[in-house]
Amino acid sequence: MSKLLSADIVMVGAGLVGLSAAIALAMAHKKVVLIEPKLISMHKENLEKSTDITIEKTEYTDWDARVYALTPGSIAWLESIGVWAFVDKSRLGTVSQMQLWANDKIEPLILKDGDAHLNKLGLIIENKNLMQALWQQINKLDVTIIKHADLDKLDYSTANKITLTLNNAQTITANLIVAADGVSSWVRSQTNVGVVIKSYDQTAIIANFKVDISHQNIANQWFKSHDTLALLPLADGLVSMVWSVANLKAAQLLSISPEHLAEEVFKHSRGILGQLTPLGQAHSFALNQQTANHLIANRIVFVGDSAHQVHPLAGQGVNLGFRDVMQLQQLITKVHAMQDIGEHSFLRRFERNRRVDIVAINTLTSGLDWLFSREYGTLNAGINWGFAQINKQSIVKKLLIQAATA
Image 1 (cartoon, rainbow, N blue to C red):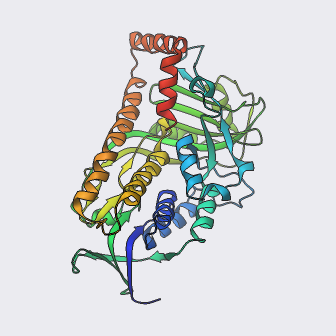
Image 2: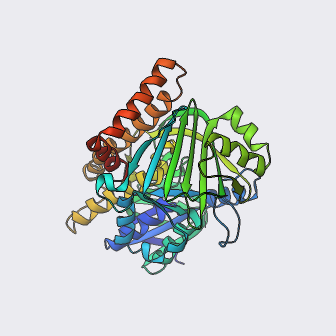
């Protein structure tokens, strides 16, 4: 490969958001160079070797503990960029209904797809399933891919361009860099863009189970003080668990056997799915909210976790990242051929358009965490009353569903 490359866009990061961005922008007739940084590759390898990991190193015939809840909006977009054709549909879990349980209330708040005239609220997909679909689509496109890259420096030595240099002296010059290189973004660290970090002092525990009683395509979620349990429907009568708890409780849950953890989940979920049989070990990751002070820098755009990391209780993390890419794709597609896509005023349009969505999700997740962390009896009674009232209001239900499925 030549030591000198030129492109319209350098895409840094080859996770779900980075791969989808490379695809979308290549399909917008931009010359794209996709870079998977070495630090991210090493991080993945370390996770796979760890005893406490977020990605299972298993054959694809096994079920991946890391799953995502995709909204209809995200699914439609993945279809539009050709990715969905490569997804293994037999491994998808359909969400046709959500049941939200507050504190120890007997009756849940129920949200159904029909309440908003939808044929589904969303789909549950494994990380490996979506990743292989993204790679299959990107391999069909004219995208230059550099894997395990050791990033060295950024500079602006050429007018109206930004140059990324690798440690092997490879240089890539472009109009724009799109950074999707995670919460510890190397690209962001090379700029003066800081982040605001909020620790929830919580850990998310993830695991898969086979259940005795059919989940009937219902996603169940229980909210208690600093304690949110979600059981999400998978195919073949399985469920995926995400249990967000205080760090001390998480350590206790992670110290017990998979069978004993299944018993704890059975008790916490009131046995509504019958006995649970564990499928492998549980894994975990720390929960934080992190938001970049700016979504842009000089000829740089931050998307996905490099721009924002949110609590999983609202199920919006990857969808939020996909919406970043949708917005960038839309802006780039609409401009005339001579538009400098790295020019500051152009990038400011992206930042203004995305900021509202990000603030709304941060406010929602922080608000829910605060609300369900209170121990006050009167407040808990108010939450239960509120859930009961929403159950009676079809218009309110429709608005809630529309906001959650964008």
